[in-house]
Length: 347
Image 1 (cartoon, helix red, strand yellow):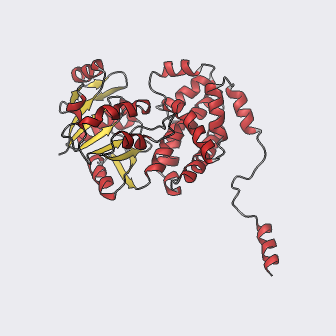
Image 2 (cartoon, rainbow, N blue to C red):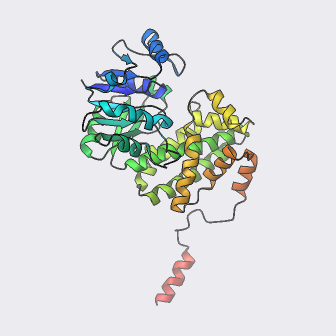
Image 3 (cartoon, rainbow, N blue to C red):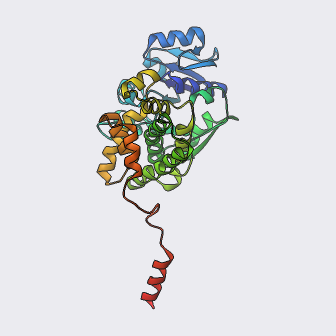
């Protein structure tokens, strides 16, 4: 049995607490919101963010961050990405040297353009920081529906340690050394999911959705590879897998917010109606910042930014995407006639 501190009591933190508890670990869940902790303690259920998922009496709830962090073998950082830096700063005095922290949020900091692991390591340099991600909606994890994720870490030892703590018959965990690829896939897919939702809101069909998913992973891949991530990661669970589920699922808050925008609501109206943090809105600007820094073309993400922040209509954005200059799907693939010319030149 391991003592684990769950830092964040939203839907994802609560769902992961049930996974770890079912594996026999002692889980303490922390929230800065006293009312949230009171609700969880009294009702043993997150009635607003994860209704219907009952929490065992073994799980402890805490508003004192020192109590939630001190003496734990593993800390799971499950706050929304916009709160990651501030929460890490608050945690720092209580974190022991080489204490393992696994981040489970998805996002890129807008101003610094840093991933969440980079932020945590900057704020708590003495910690051993890892990331857990994948196609894993909290609603389904809480109901114990089969789910697979990937844990990335600096060392195989840390990755396998986290894998062993989380893994069970309904929650399968793979390991990977490509932390950057895992984080980029997890954060940028939320922006593409906003686009997919906008298409749904406009009443478009499966053809449109398939195009957005496919061209979306191409955009994510171009940027991620330029930044040093690995192709295998982008073709796996935390790349195309996470993108598919976020673009298609009824549980996806990013898709739902995009759908509301496609139906004519403003970004703020959509976020207010979803009543949860829509990570893609915060990652959209950061994605364009990274694209500019690395000289990468990201037309879908560019149009999402235009809709979110510059009052462009969703229909106009789609038309602009469809009417861009003609091009090949994969520029690097050779034509047989070109290969023939090369052979003649060599001869």
